Image 1 (cartoon, helix red, strand yellow):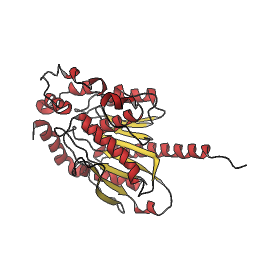
Image 2 (cartoon, one colour):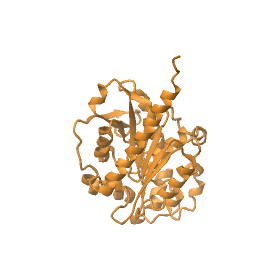
Image 3 (spheres, rainbow, N blue to C red):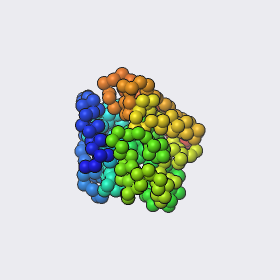
Image 4 (cartoon, rainbow, N blue to C red):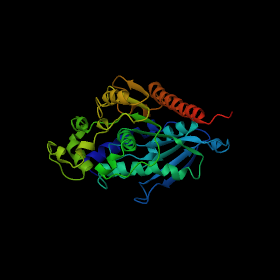
Length: 319
């Protein structure tokens, strides 16, 4: 385990109880459903839902959750309470793992995230999922990956440019928490243990210079930052960040401003103060954390209602 992996592993261990503080009653979980056969441990997800939604005869929205961990660590198990909360609000939730460096480079992480998104269509064959109501969410590196799923969905030309698979289902909305959307800014961060050069090398899949002066030589450098890929086709988005985020400092606000220029609807939430740092929303016992999560679901509920209204308006009128 190198320094990058050690740092983010310690974050998970230290924060595990605060990230999973609640058990929500009556939420069922089907564990380790594979979305590809690339890796038995990592290309799979846990599927959460309230069994009551199986009985009402209706289709329901689904949330794809992508965990964070600096791209190199993390696991779906650390998002159990968050996913149970989403499920308690009437959503199906597919909470996924994905392969990470050094097993794959950053585009391998993206590829797995796309495969997981496309797998929702397969889940819809067994469960009453409304494929017009897919929400993609993530935190930290998971927010990067969620944003990249949207980038590929809303600009299919990226598939040819990056050799990524297409996103074959629609994405109705995004929930982005504390993500690194500008890789140049991320590589300039003063992250503890001086791990940035090591982390950057793991992400591109080969050894970079310590000063990262050769990062721009990376073959996909022009396509590595989601903030540069936002366009007018993007879906509505909720985005949160902290002004005291030592890992993704000055990332959330510029991404929010970019989204507001291009997306039909955007809602923002940010926290202040040193006690509300990176991924503050995961400390669910804190009032500001739950306020952020509740706001994200209220926004998402509104988007789902908009979809229903559009469907009704598009129905042929009986004379």
